[in-house]
Image (cartoon, rainbow, N blue to C red; front, side):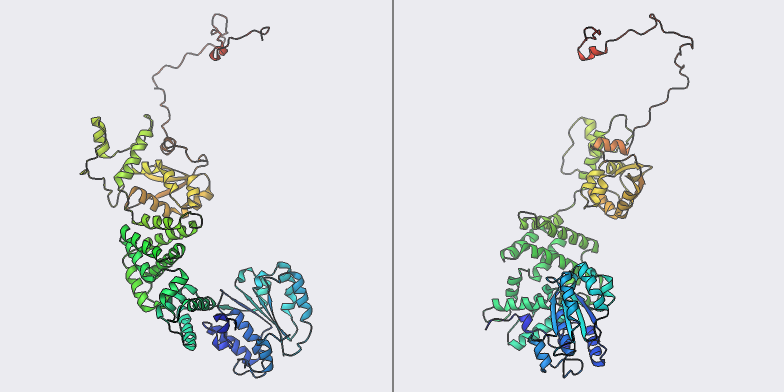
Length: 567
């Protein structure tokens, strides 16, 4: 006998067997019992949550000859014909392949005929959002006022694509994602019925990776059972099928990242790769683990995490050792890595580099701010007005005419917790475009077309129009954090945002940036005591004696001036 997939074999045959949708089951049963069945239903939800199953059960229930408590008997002639797909009055249409207006016109002609065997003609249109605009318009009038013997049941995973005119004519039911606890309970019931041994951890992993879809969970379970050799459903078999990483390694890697222990980070990654785990799946599991740690640190309700009490306790303990801001930075870093993994030639190297970036200690202020200030001082012209305070070591060595000292006992400059070292704002303004280069897109592009200057002790961000100013101003928290990280400041500087239409493009080099941030003063006015230049009298006429001598302008180019004939 050919093998039947587990999700088809275990498909619910009654409304009460549908998992995780009690609100929908109760509403449909009440309508069937009272006889107040609507002419059009819309079932929405993610994949594998029971939309098509509920539609098929409804088609049998409205035509069942022995319906009891809102459930079809599945024994009578009408139910058997529908179950065996022999009924001419129940049609299941795939809108993905029958999405043209001609198909809807044919359907519109069919609904005029009375049912041949059953009480109602039921049309189940799956993935209805795939219909074209003209097909929706053709269906509109029929859906609004169908014949009394016709019922439409529409199913979709993307209700946003359905026109409002269709939505307003249907009773809408939203199918929820199935919780991990419900998935595990259902899988246990199926395994007990099949007399298959299993491990609790294996079922937890299947439920975790099914992402709320019962069909996905049954497909994974079927695949894992076929991989076993009689010992039952084992956790290592599930990990081998999924390419996933054991949750213990996720905890180990997270602890190593929190401790900034690069050696331990490399060991955990190496062990996972040696076990044959998929790099992209490892990164995805790690992002989800960071999310669980973040949520566990913010809530005391275990049911919101959709995990067991034991794992929730470990997540809460791990979240107590790091701030939420740092966890969100980890999520951003590895989420960017997942997007870039499609284009990198070696995914393992990219994953290791991303993890090691978190472990690298931050550079001291003397190594960043000191070098930036020194570059600004060199790039500024002698007539500039930028008052740059160089690091004490540089000033002392420069006065002695020697190279900067590299003595190991030289103490770095430490920034005060609540104040900024004089000259740092000028260095920030001069290094504005290098700061912008480290920002994420599209903020990087916006800041590259802006500038920075220091005015009255305030760091101003200059934009060339109000629209750019509003976009950058909304992201000022990220800009201040980038400045604090680059210059190792405990308190980032406050920012002011101004519009200057004259600033249309970024400076091309550091000297231009410094010149724009601190423009040179206007030329000094002539002293009041200086005599005014002598002016010629009003009746003065130019003569040969007073005219200035004629000069040969072409001599500058090496050619004498020629007369007209020579020309």
